Image (cartoon, rainbow, N blue to C red; front, side, top):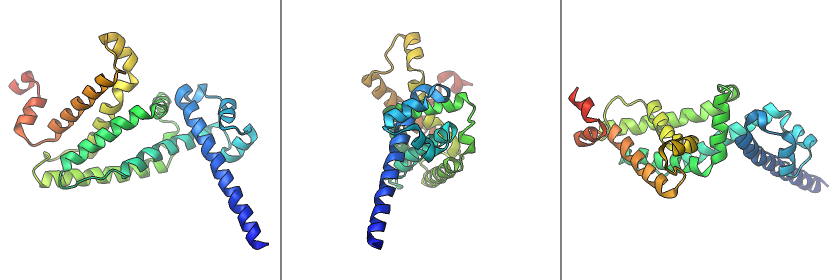
Length: 231
């Protein structure tokens, strides 16, 4: 009897985890596409193929569900970052790898971009309540600091580079063209969603990051406009 009871409990737990994951998946898409105010619990429940009462049973209310979605989205990004196989003998290559990963991640996860846009419109109201998001980011910050220190010791990366500035630069290079593709496309009469253009953008971003970080004089001169070098 005890074994049967344990088996039933295990099945219920698996079912609960599966249902919770389906709700989170549907909610990520809903909040990513429609924002917090525009998202509808009814649509989330229908997409997840569960009733609203069960959704509230797992997550409590819309605000709690949205925070859970945010935390899960950030956790997915941090988990995939942690799988990067860095060669610490080449610190510049490590940072290029992080840029290439981040660039690709944002493009392949448009709902995450939508969540970031929504959260910034609300001035970080919900992400500021999270404990897991800053804790996970702190590990990334430590790793970046170690890479930069190695690069500085090897004479590959110029001294005094702030790891926060590095990551903000990587994030900006990876998502600005996505967040503004339609407006910039209309302004500049170019398709910023074209795979060819985005491949060029990635190459351009890698060159910018490397030249900004490098101790190489030639790279630094390439990164600095003529008027700025003259002054």
